[in-house]
Image 1 (cartoon, one colour):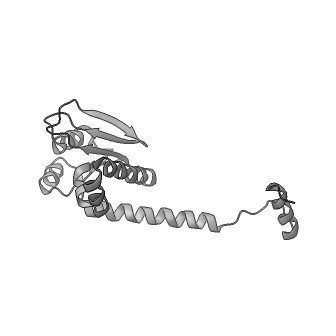
Image 2 (cartoon, one colour):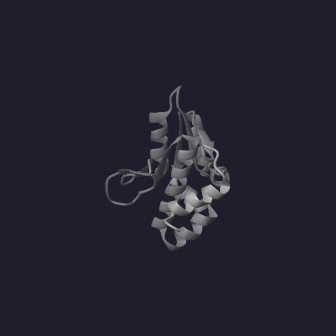
Image 3 (cartoon, one colour):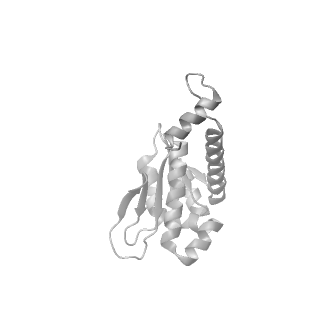
Length: 169
């Protein structure tokens, strides 16, 4: 199984669309990132976790799931980097490949040392854009394929049936 751990605020600060949104409404930027990661998870089959930094914010660590993506807010006096490093240590094993999405060079070196792989913010952006494009293409193909009746029926008769189905005379 592949696991992708996303450094939430690092990605928000690196993706142009999320940067603009962050400046207006940080909660919406977090929500959009979570939505994009949910699509990523659904398409790739990888487990996705997003870690948001709550360093300096009073309170306990919170975890919740949104569209099957695990969203973690670190506890007071814990950085996202520290939490990501702990998660890599907990999750990494022979059967699990762990990827960490961050452009923080120091964090990349630390997770490399733990045996995880890195995905820069730019690489993740390109990957999500490619996935969105592939989904769009799949939808277009499915819409272009006309459903065919199992029994061959004359086109005029099909039109009559379609009118009846829609309640038209």
